[in-house]
Length: 454
Image 1: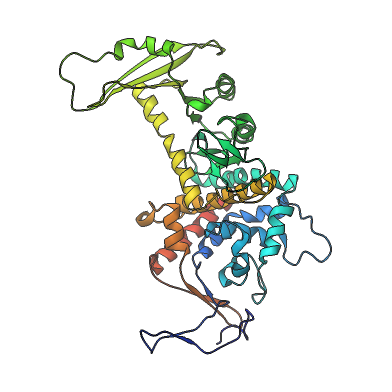
Image 2 (image 1 turned 90 degrees about the vertical axis):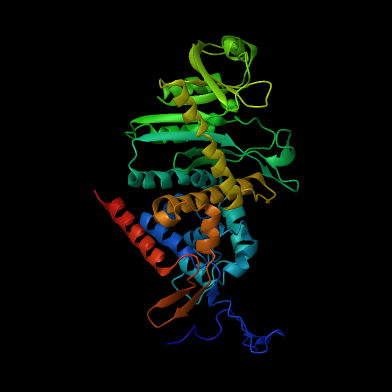
């Protein structure tokens, strides 16, 4: 039994370093044997059993010619994806990750003594190969294809879609970036569609100065078409007031989506509930008072009248009430309409997780296409992380955020030891003990069997 033959990383074995506070302590460095991302193997196991990244081998096109293809496309795609899952938001760390034993294993290097792709190779892969128009379109479709594969495991009869936009601040002169007055910064203005499980159905990078609902149909069409013949019992849609567009109402109704979309208040709507806007005589209550009303309303730009539900809240210490309006096709009670609409806020939480755990706001390339590629890679990394969270995590840690998942499960010290016929990965048993690892691997194996069942 022995470690890797020779010095795989090309490092010279030098005398240990010493520290002053304890002369017994000596420091040695074995970069090619040790990893700080030991937990990534679990994500790779889920990926392999569901056949997710394997789709890239027939969806993406390799434009490299001659002897430039030292690393195959699928291995580089996995390196891009799993690097982002581990929190490395761009290719700046690719040089170090190329020597990381866990990254070399999960990228699919059969010859374990070979490094993964370098920083320059990964840079060309992401900004050149993946930026081809066909590859960029394939990346945008890949999230939906992954979700279709996972959907058969969830077996839920209903679908709920939430659409929302966000800002990705920039700090240079990136192509397509612009000042956005709402966010108060120079940024891109991407658009996202999530389902009720937190999966990112589709996203698109847009210039920074466009309206929140700009190009909503181009983003929504592929998602709606995927579910058209899915056999789902009911389909629903939620959005804030930026998406209160007559064309969107007609589109959702034509595609048999029930919806709840917030409306901006105006004088006509407020007149319809004038009796609720008058404070009751007597001493104000110390509790929040909520009142609901519904009525039929048709704006001049609407094709037909629609149901509008109003909510009026009187809060202690506030002189004026808080008023909200939601246009809806739902036939449930007024309170249930608002309960359903208020859950739209989970989409904002998903976006925050994407920003903080996956760092998908890091769009620092010069060209718009290259940044669009980065956003799609971050979206895929987000979905893989969310699949593991919603399908695999045991109940004891099921409430972990994606940030906790990265910090407690992925960022685990690991040592790789190579034998003649096997490779042993020794993991630090810190936040996740052996029992949980065993339980999660068993769950993934059961998912594979379930996915392959007729």
